[in-house]
Image (tube, rainbow, N blue to C red; front, top):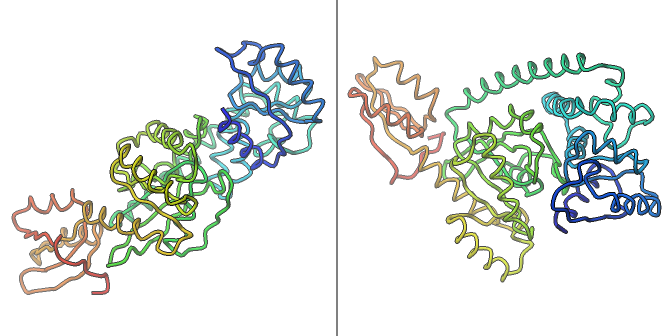
Length: 412
């Protein structure tokens, strides 16, 4: 319970609120009218008066009726967990795609709550819970909301198609999608591995916009790493649906790099939350590498205990740190090993008349070297296993595995 309230406090801080107090009630089931009991509601009202609170945030989702009843009872603005997260996303959205996704999720959340939310917004000038579509929607009716939702869905489908085209153009590269609980350190790892200038902040949902960078893994190996939006406990379903275009990067990746905050006392629960979202978007069972990050914040004894527990729960994994010198070498090595397994290096001998296979190699694989002969062309490529298997089934093409040989750099 303390962990949940601590996370809620961090969410409120990220949204720009100052937490002045907390109140807890254990219930077998929510009260149908107020979610909390009437006596607890009276206690909450008194506490808000004593602390001069102007906003109450619930860690659970409230029905429209419960939200309206609580606001009437308390005489204050009331938000639930979903609305708070949506507000943070509206604050953090940078690109047009992210803004479309957030607005869609907000409108779908707002639609059944129009009466309560617009009554409140009509007497509010900005602040938490009013970002995003906000005041531009005050005088609209449900038909206008529905038209806007339809338009946003069309825009996101268009973006999804464009994203798919770009992914197809990168099909020869080994693609890694970074996933994990928010603030686990995904962006920090991508920034450290790629050397690029990415926004990094020690706050929940510091960035919503996916970023793809080419990463040199040494020994001639490279990969495309894509950062994705961080997950969280009870991530609103509307957000998962709205960010489908971005999350397609996960489904299309060759490997998921699941980054875990090793310094969090509840990292195992965070792993479960991430796995729930992966299941929801159809990515459960995808090839995954677990990286326990921020090990520099652990004592030697805590690190050894983590190794044993992680090995028992998950099997192979790596420990990483962006702050310690050499703290990412184990991760680099593990990624190289995965590339060797999923995209091995082979040598092909192709008849000079088989232009289609040669074009396919350049289009869908990574050509490392080429030697042209009078009758046959010899190339060394790094390619997906499925593509190599298709070549092996063609009698005119000779395929030789080079797994035991050192990789060839693109320059030579």
